Length: 112
Length: 111
Image 1 (cartoon, each protein chain N blue to C red):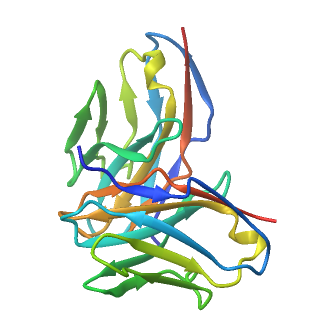
Image 2 (cartoon, rainbow over the protein chains, first blue to last red; image 1 turned 180 degrees about the vertical axis):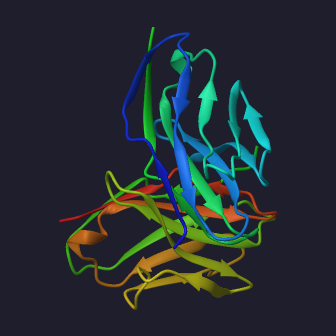
């Protein structure tokens, strides 16, 4: 069945370090791919998305490219800040309004 | 900015008791969802709701669960007789154009 696998955390980085959080997916057809972020005490917020192969989603310095050949959607940021500390979820959906399949989340801790 | 709200933020209940988790979706949204996340595990889909009926449900969503939109603003998840394994974070979401907006979650602890 459809599923998302992302790297386990926590990931601990120093401020200004480069971030990669790996995400791979299994799905038939052409899913849309998402990264959501959850800050402490808050809900899941959409960070970025990509709806077709080779699309790059970007927001707030974060980027992820939809790679159909490797079924991946890795999240990257060139220089993390303490305020980026949160839990990051990779997700896919097959159609608009359909259910989302989430990964297990990766906790990022950024130290000053 | 409009947001999805959920109450309570934390609910503690005894096994066998009924609980109702409440959500207020964004006002012009038409599709509503419940997800749950057991500690350390994936966020799992429970149910989707559109036009006052369930549009899809997972195998987790058995007869112990029900959803309702009792008025124009609330969307509720009822667990009829809670089990220990129902302890989880429950997220409500709503959608109008494919992008789902999530609430902050309700942490349910069943003792």
